[in-house]
Image (tube, rainbow, N blue to C red; front, side):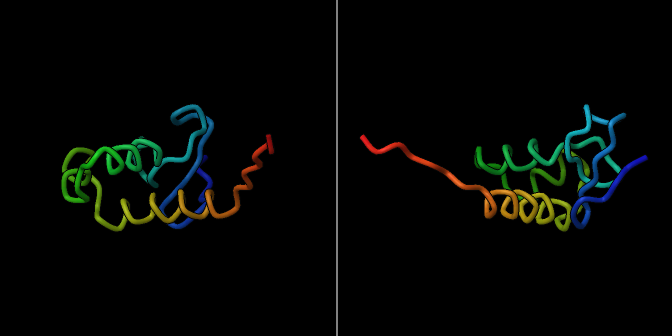
Length: 77
């Protein structure tokens, strides 16, 4: 059973090994973000994965929220 972890983002142990996906699809959030990072436009990602622009923005918002809580420690030296 899918569990919503963010708007338009769900996880389900039976789908994509429990990785976050766009709700109602098998499209991993990571794939959407990666496509955009490689220069694809929102429109191209929507066409490739049959998503709505809101789905792409939801993937970015989820990724931003994860990174916003991330702490990076750098060793001095």
